[in-house]
Length: 221
Image (tube, rainbow, N blue to C red; front, side):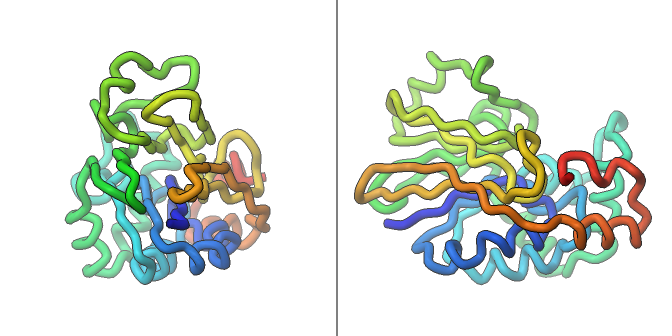
């Protein structure tokens, strides 16, 4: 099965647009959360993703939209959630509220566990390569563990379960101007990280028109 794995889209439809040709060919799309936040193309992103054969989990920004952000949330986080709260379609809000925090099951005959942060604390943990708790994660009886949150791609196929962070579609923090994802061919048992360049200028312009501060260019250019 041809599966694409996405995370941290953050209401950036222009970035998602760069991946659309591949996503339309995918037999299944796994979405690891943070559909909203930071940017201003909320309904455009959700309209497209919900048209795909997809499985999704909820991210921390999605949860902020549903139940409020923490007192320590920076301006960029507050902006994205306040904007999403004003414009999101009611049906999209209900859909986000119905997403699980963790999903485990079969995809193309292979088993996978999906979470936004870690399987232990899916809304809070950040699993970086130099801080991944290898022994506990190896105890999960799945072919693969997929997670997001860090906005940085990571892939380790040297053991079972494999560990995958596809990086961020909407706000990658290792390289600007690309939309990140991963392609998983379950029949061939191969996984590859994907980066598609795009122009973030319209995303920045739209956010500025809606009151975003100078932080808006961080990570995009």
